[in-house]
Image 1 (cartoon, helix red, strand yellow):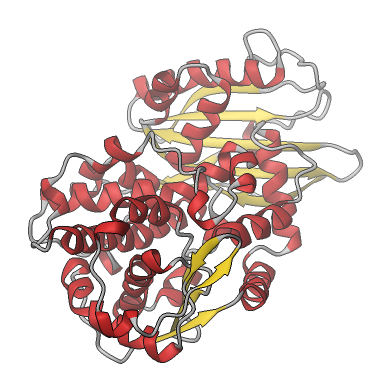
Image 2: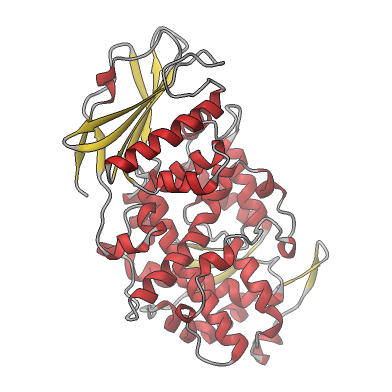
Length: 450
């Protein structure tokens, strides 16, 4: 789940990566003399003036410009922030980016998929996660880079480097406008976030390597970052305090939070390894799906996802509560959650080419249903997904083989069907209470693009 993680510099991967290089980094004597460490929960924290922060930002700017491939076109603003101001900022962002009705609908969809409890207070969880983990962020509205005063001195420069890239990105493509244009497209928004965070993380790590060795750095010459980082336990972030909220968060929340950093930095490395001219994957070249982030060769080849839209409105007696898509990433997480074979789950999701779902609510009954329609690259890909999805639904509901229309323990009859639409292989999943099943044509869709 990634809709809520917009615009916050959640330095989870940053914290992990920067810890390894902290002792070897060199810092300017002038800026070091302006630092006045104080105790903060037992950890040494940076307490510097905004003037000192600005001077330090100026010192690292040329190297970060070089690693990111973006040159500043106007002055950059930086300021420190404290716990209270950060909390108020997070609350304001959540009010606009995750309003109560949308939060409730998203929770209902993920609960129906067995990914979160239906009692989850999503805004409260997100707020707690952000307050636990945020140590720096760039605010496109004020054009200001903020650093939390609790950042340990050894980590100050990496935090600045990471958030500085976001400030440079904003000068290049207007982050706020780009985000707003994708607000109703979950998977495309996730891909956008992965590019922005992955790019910032890549430039930060390359800058760190240069600071550590004193030589020019090129991360494309290193082994694959995904393979290096995928098994790192990023919930063990003792440097910046507790990670209890992150550790206890449902996998769909936790993985959605980490993917923009892990998946994103791997995407940038693989893209730039294939294209030594280091094209910026922004604007017209911005990836449109997590499929393109997970499989960079598809982005390089211009393989766009298929746009999937419901052909009609809701049937009589039903209302559409919420409509969006999952994408390959969240389809993969759904399968991984319920099938005890990650390789099979990932393989079954890899043929994804587009999807759409609707959460429906009955007028005269306390009934709620989910319709999920997906299109696949090949008939074999669709058949593989059907097979593994039936296992997932069987595990989710405890209903025999699952996905065959038989009633489950919750009084529901999930049905998974393989159909063809305009010559394309499509999978239709209907998950409704017994006696409230809609007619099959409820899930008719239009396919376009890709």
